[in-house]
Length: 503
Image (cartoon, one colour):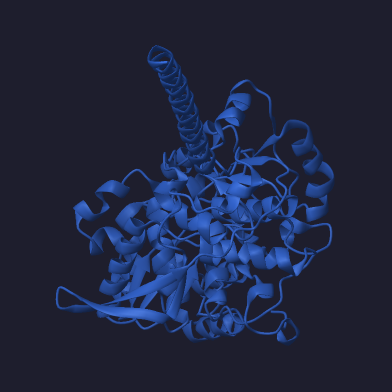
């Protein structure tokens, strides 16, 4: 019995060891499975916007920026920093919009900063109403200015993404599997039709997303109509333009410094003097230029094959009001409008063609002519040199805050700043009637008019051209001749549309 009991006991011990071993294997398997599943969850959460299951898309992500984009002034807190009181605004994110994703929209903008700005606003609206994911737009690096700046070099990209997340999902880059498809050429690229309404995108572009998953729209300037769109689309374009497209902290800080310097010296007028070499070459306008300068501008125009118009009658174009005003013509207009000669005149432009010779009349009439290059130290602008869009962003900020804004040509910056100043409360923007001005200038310079008659005529012509409330001009079937949406986004303005009157 003792032997038998010992044998039985030994058998029980062996069975117990086997049981413990089996349980250990089960626990190891469970632990391994748990670790594997948790690893998958972490990975899917990180890329949950594209590959993760739908339930993960509402989870917080470690990649979400900690500072939301919308200020809530009522909850502002004041703290002392270096002896000065600093107001720290609290922010809140809008909730994410959940929708069935129809595909991914890649965008290549073209043109200068403000042309691209309008295109970005349009593309966000299009992405929203097609229920697609927008990839952060690519900026033009091949234009005349050859600016290598990326989106995040000019705009606060995290603010852009998060401030719009209740409208559209925006990613910085394509998900890896889709990026691979693009590298293999499995996508569709095209320029959309200019001035199209949203039905064009629903009927013509949306099916391309269903077929290719990734659609690349290039040459995106002026691709959405000015008029005839639902108010919701118009208001979204405004929200992107006036809230989501915030400049980087470096640009904002430097812009505020320029404004502070100007404000310390009194009121200031921003003159968008569009008299740079590229503008004159492109437009063919040579008023006041020497024969050698006119020839240089013509050679430059022929050097750029995408500038389609080559043979241009400068005098005829000027009479039609299609040329930027010269510095000399601008000086006469500012004087005729009784602009205070002691007022600071900030030049928002690149290098003026003809240099100090062409600026002499303006400098003589208004001694306080300044530029950012004069107001700031060389080191302040070091990182902005050869980045025309970043320099233009500084001028944009100063233009918004000026007491008076005067553009001498109705290019993209003039139009977008005009609209932004309307949005901020109809700040004084003098919209020059160039066709009438050149006629009056010629009559004054040839002695037909005396100064008093010239001045009174200029004032009378511009009394209703000061950026006051107005409806956009709508011309059916001729959208290029209409008022640009971004110069007068009246659907977004605080005043009732029914109270607006035409200019």
